[in-house]
Image 1: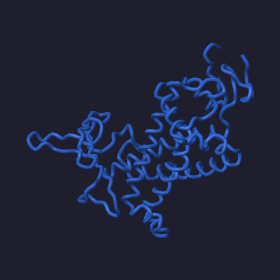
Image 2: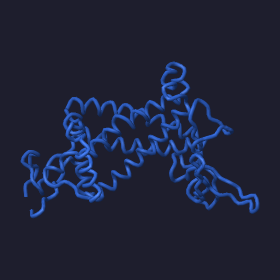
Image 3: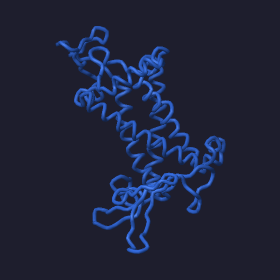
Image 4: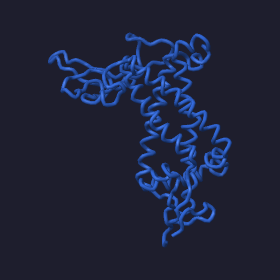
Length: 284
């Protein structure tokens, strides 16, 4: 069995180099950064657990999303709920109403295990969030510049005209649905669905997170009001910000499922050492 084979001559079972050092460093820094930003963002959301469209948003305005509690007028007991539009879902014990580590009922939107800080602190959450926002923005810029220079974007992320064809896309969807992953040297190349997902994160979700974060800032509203105006107001920017965060969580969950199904040891090793053992073809 060959070791460190060149990608051009690689076969199933060979150990090859898959991820560059810049990609591996950015991947792990970004994983920690997004986790901290998500958890601190949930604490910020706890301060006002409602989302609106438009310029304004206050307790008496109608939100399109709300997490809160209701009190039963007969029993006096509270229940937690998630409301999207006119649809309301009981989330008692998970969202809106939950028990802390001391067994006391809390009425914040998200539980303490999911937030930074774990105790309610809007000021503390903002410090964490803004500090790691710099890490996210500068890290993304550095990664994109580096990937442009070394050809990673052109070679691995660029979607060709053939890959855009409905027939090709449907084939990739069908293969994923049947959990049929590429073998041999083909495993080194991203398919069209992977390219779409990574391009969506790199060029849509992460930039939108950064821009909407700026649009919510009163400072940005003062020196560059056009950023806020692009989204139709600070509350709309806040809604887009949380929608992007939710989509990043969805991406992460799907990503982890694919890693587990494709072989977690091999996949994680490739993101730590850069070396990846190609899956064997049938009959090898």
